[in-house]
Image 1 (cartoon, helix red, strand yellow):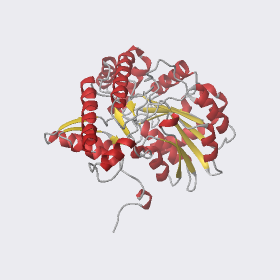
Image 2 (tube, rainbow, N blue to C red; image 1 turned 90 degrees about the vertical axis):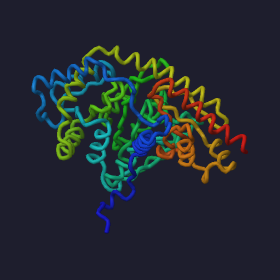
Image 3 (spheres, rainbow, N blue to C red; image 1 turned 45 degrees about the vertical axis):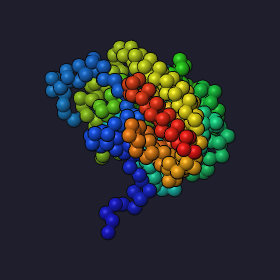
Image 4 (cartoon, rainbow, N blue to C red; image 1 turned 90 degrees about the horizontal axis):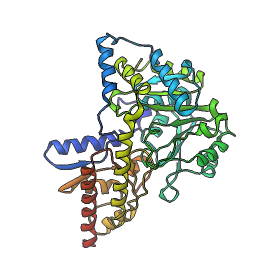
Amino acid sequence: MSFAARRLAAIKPSPTLAVSAKAAKLKAEGRDVIAMGAGEPDFDTPQHIKDAAIAAMNKGLTKYTAAGGTPSLKKAISAKFKRENGLDYTDRQILVSCGGKQTSFNLCLSLLNPGDEAIVPAPFWVSYPDMAMMADARPVFVHAGIEQGFKITAQQLERAITPKSRLIWINSPSNPTGAVYTADELRALGEVLRKHPRIVIATDDMYEHILLDGSKFVNILNVCPDLYGQTVTMNGVSKAYSMTGWRIGYCGGPQELIEAMENVQSHSTSNPASISQYAAEAALNGDQSCIEPMVAAFKERGRVVAEGLNRIPGVKCLAPTGAFYAFPDCREAIRNLHAAGRIATPTDLALCDYLLAQEKAVAAVPGSAFGSEGYLRISFATSMENIRKAVERMAEALAVQRVAA
């Protein structure tokens, strides 16, 4: 007898968390493992943010708040949207949640009905399709490989839309690829979506501040402001301020939809942690220069990762332009490993197991977890020393394969 609901039949555990847990277990057993799977900055939360949390605790601000967030944090979010993105949202159009993941989950449960379709550009953040399926909707994948910079085209989007289409995610800068949509590319997508006002656009801007090529952040509303009424702008403090464990995400959007999302949240987690909200308020209102050293470090790390991976036979890697991920194409290396008898099956999962089985191991996440078989996600949110060692280990493991071949 199974106790699990039928809706969970197609739902998979988070592969990124699974890889991190496996690497941690091997390390605890004494194995030499460099973990390149975690999607969180290795920097500490800035001191002024921690001080704000301590001050809130000392003031006794440890009680329930409004389910959708404190008025003062909503005010800070509204000011942030206006200041940095040129977007106007009232307090009633803003929802604070327990991380960006809950924002997307609230959106799916509030918007999608059985039989609806959610368009998911691939490679995708691992939770998008599962969230849609938990809302009894069907994910529709639009694939964009390395040959088109991991970004879908307007023509691809047009072909994917049906009368059942209800939602699309746009994640730029991207997890897992580090790709960033240009203003012209977003404008082209907007021209398609303008013809389909029933489709809600979820613009996931979580990595907004982590741009590695000197470009200015832009989302779809900046180039297509007339889509305001069908767009939910999602963000959070996790990545920009190294606050992953504080669990604060937020969004702005059409009031009716935001109120529905808050209603869902009120019956799941209720309010986000009060202390975390006061810390997030300090992050958004405070000195933003704390972001700059992290971005500078990620820029240099991304360069080293891409250059190192491109020197490995059978591996191709685009220079990441945002976030802190590289997404190398390892399909040729996988074929070579399989031909040499080093892996039993020609898959990215087998490649990850092979790298983890080495005496000097590397933990990475298979691209198939993000909808792209044959790739790996390499997080460079770790020290430069670890990055150099990890690339050297990968090169050595694949070079052994080439000698055997």
